[in-house]
Image (cartoon, rainbow, N blue to C red; front, side, top):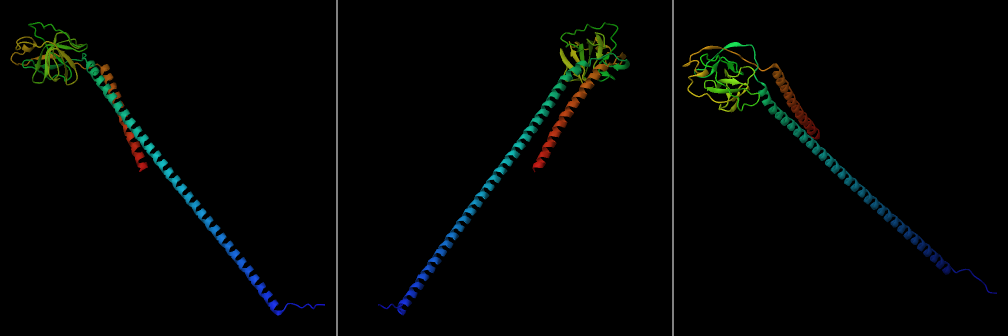
Length: 296
């Protein structure tokens, strides 16, 4: 029978070498696989970090845009409030100006009424002196005419009220007294004097001419009729000859208490309206100054 024998030493050595070689290849392969795995993991971590950074950048950009939009919205709202306040102030100023204009218009409407209401009424007489020789009246009250004793030799001339406005006394056959710009003549349509009675007014404002309305410095109004003719030889203008002085009783008149009370009430009302308009304008200006101070 054949005899079997074990591997020879050479075979055994070769087998061991092959085993070692195979083991080395296995280790190398495992190392390569581990290295590849680590590289893949590192790449994944890098990609995740990049994605996270991009996400953070996007969020930061969104927050920046939102902040800019909010700031623009706040600026637009502040500008709208400013424009609204300016418009409110403008309307308040226009309203105050309108009220002041209306008050002035009412004042202008009231003034002629006050002048026409100031028709003289009788009051207690007192002695004064009137000078007619060279024109003018001395020692007379500023706001009313004074009556003068008519000459006894001749009767007073007839007086006409033609074209005189209603409620306004007329003076005819009149003469302008150059020394004080008063008017002397015969009055009619007055509740204080008889028609045809000679009077001298207080100084007038402006020029005097026939068939016109004149006003005295105190506010009384008179309608001037026909102007006196001649050099002063007859009528009231010739009483004192070449300028002598003669005493005559005269009557001074004052506006009625009712007219005075009405005028006072109108003055107080007008003053109150003007004061109210002024206060409203000052309040609007103060409010605007406070708003400007807050915005600053």
